Picture (cartoon, rainbow, N blue to C red):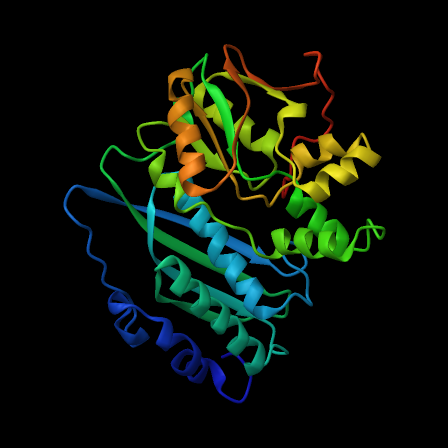
Length: 326
């Protein structure tokens, strides 16, 4: 039983039952009912966020909830899937009160409206801490339309959406680094850490275009390595081609060694994909149509591993390719 004036089931009735979709049955049963349209497959993913690891203890509860939902929607987008539902499990210390949970649920409600998803159910338990929040997202894709990691081929071009490294910098700012940044740069970078933008419109549009795809969560170099491992290929990335925000460019200009850190920092949740050269025009049209930058940053080659190179094509040493929990 979670402590607080409302208790576990009171919290469910007041804060979470209003978020349930038809398949959630008002959160009154032990399981949900989900239909799958003919010719489609369900796509499921799960992520956990731990206080002090994935978010800071004083982060606003509504933004914690929205980030939790969005990182999962990003995984669905990375397979070309359209989001539908989600399940939520919370393990909260007894010191977390009803007000925190109410604000957390309000954040979920806000993003449910934005992304057209609904809650199916879940579980709530107490823990001595820290808090751990787990969300399972469910989407759908036409049979054969899913985009997996293992399809990259030598000769493919490597592309990435949006900008890289902002979330890494946003966390640094929250921890007291880069004090000379302007207020507007600080706000922009912190927002990228606390509230990523899952590319739910782009992902499904890349079906039939991208050979392989994932989202950047552990760091661009590390995640491209996952594509290479699954596909049995190698990749070369031009450091100068990485798309950076204006704030990141200003910092990188003053600290030349920072660019490599941006290529290996995590939490971007941009789509990273390999596509054949003949798809370049279609990708640029998508970029214009969606008003979303999509940048060509490298190539897929025979071999193994990821090489980061400078403007002259010379290898750049990378000590740590990205985030690892263990």
